[in-house]
Length: 168
Image (cartoon, rainbow, N blue to C red; front, side, top):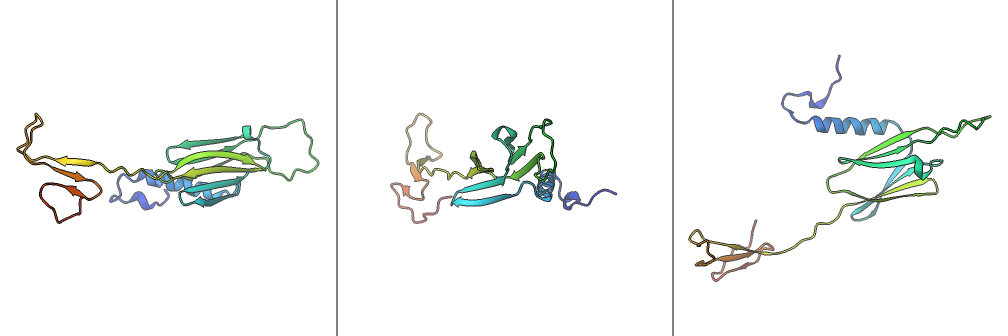
């Protein structure tokens, strides 16, 4: 018997991407290694911190695949050591975080066994410019009868006064 999914309904065609994203997030959440924190460090910035004690910088990789941040760790085998007791886990891992649209990875730093990955959501610059509205009788050579210049901030410039200030 196949597994049940919310997306198996014939009314939900084209949602396979969401199902795959949810499956990946569920698989990543089921394994608790390595532990991590997600911290809001500013209004538009987050920091993911993973506890990766014992991993060197060369043992770690961070890849952004579509909107998914994938952090992998793999330690090289040290066959020269003979352990009497081995209690420190030295296993490979993979952690995946699904990022919202617009989130960018700013950088990463390894410090005292903690891997910090900084994320930022840049604020779009707002630029106001005036757009001229031409009438249907305007001639393509540039000479026109009456034109209205509309400022996208909601203000209008015209020889005739306009009372409605809402511009969509």
